[in-house]
Amino acid sequence: MTKFKIEIILYGSDELCPSCVHLPSSKETFEWLEAAISRRFPNQPFTMSYVDIQQPPEEIEKADFAKRVIDEDMFYPVVVINEKIVGEGNPRLKTIFAELEKYGYKAEM
Image (cartoon, rainbow, N blue to C red; front, side):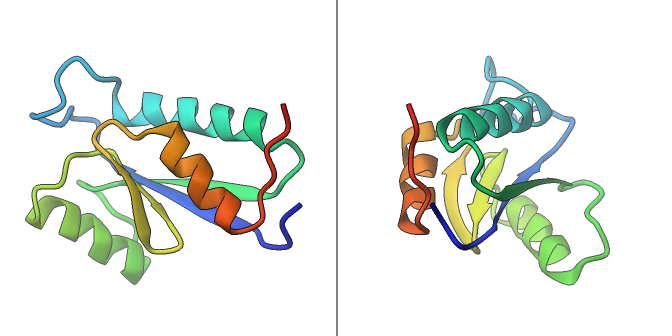
């Protein structure tokens, strides 16, 4: 079990990504991802944050990254763990789980 509490940040928007038609919204992806991580790594601490790229918080790092998502035309939602992009557009659970395991998270089936 991990000793760290990881923050997983999902950068998205109420507007669907123009290149991501037929995919769930950013908020739907946030809810789905939070549930999937909780099932895979039960009783292991993590926090999930949703950042609206159109109305970012005043927190400088999150506001700067939200601007980067727009400026670089990234496919959103963008999933970030410890400043590393681990998903863009249609995030893959396998990639996100693998990143969490690097921090000591243990899958429980």
